[in-house]
Image (cartoon, rainbow, N blue to C red; front, side, top):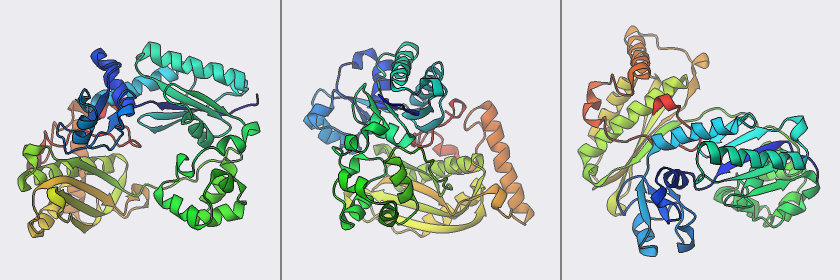
Amino acid sequence: MGSVDWLFLDMNAYFASAEQQMQPSLRGQPVAVVPTQTDTTCCIAVSYEARPFGIRTGTQVGEARRRCPKLRIVEARPPVYVRVHHEIIAAVETVLPVEQICSIDEMACRLSPQHRRSEEAIAIAHLVKQAIAQQVGEALRCSVGLATNRFLAKVASNLQKPDGLSVITRKDLPHKLHAMALDDFPGIARGMLTRLHHYGVHTTAQLCALSRSQMQEAWHSVLGQQWWHWLRGDDIPLTPTSRRSVGHSHVLPPELRTDQGALAVLVRLIHKAAMRLRKLEHWAGRMELRVSYLGGAVPWQQTMHLGCCQDTSAMLQTLARAWHDRPARGKPLKVSITLLNLTPTNSTTLPLFNQQREATQAAHTMDAINARFGTDCVYLAPMHHARKTAPMRIAFTHIPEIDDV
């Protein structure tokens, strides 16, 4: 049957499955997980029982209710999903080491040489599924992909859902991929799909037939060469990239859809983003603020220079100046903050003035106290009325540690 090097695990409908595991009454029921209990927000996870009704991630809650009157709506509980995520890792590692955490619901494992024959790899995959079911919960189903590189293992994990197990060996290439649409591949979204179409590539068979130089030209970067190797089963690592931004966004619940409510949540989001920035040992050069409004009003967006900043108080002062000058545009719906122009500490010229240094040191001291005694044990005064706003949300590529939730 050939050999494989990687096992890729994808938890199926993870947030919805976690709720079905925690709440047995939800099992076998159509479930949608939402950020807040309002019909104007969107589903962020949908159980497989809800999908025959045409409900998907991103479906507006009001529309989802109309399509499925018996839909069970559950407000998201990020701390629960983080805890279960770490339990899943621990369960998988009773079978084999986890090489890489790819997202809150995905992880990759490199198989040891004695387990790389397809028969042994399939047996290992079944043991992984069994460990999750027995140690974490039987409602948590996963799809597993086995292949000669991590990219194709991820592709394989998407071939059969839910609870699937698929194998791609070198002998299967490229014909096993030909039935896939171009945008079934991870990394080919709308923009890349349009670029490939302009290049004359409309099918996976045409993509696989490109030469290495043609693929580099199509991608406009050396990433195209990596794709050429990946599609042939070569285990070529992804070129490391540097972090470009840190940000948070929040859909406002109805009671906070006022200017005062939006500002309070922005204060909270800046506090969270600045704390993450310091934990990542990066400094920000710019800050972008954005407010979206109900009724289709033009969003307000402002980008401000920070210089070289890690200090929460300096960011709040910048917010105050921008907020004072912003135009009134209606009832706010969603707010977001993004820190940009990031540089790591070891590549940064630190602030020269004592006042800036002291403010940054005070921020690090607050982080240390909060890490020891609990989140928001110590906080800046402007955040006093915003501590309960903007609860934790999980970015799929950034999973908090249990101590952070």
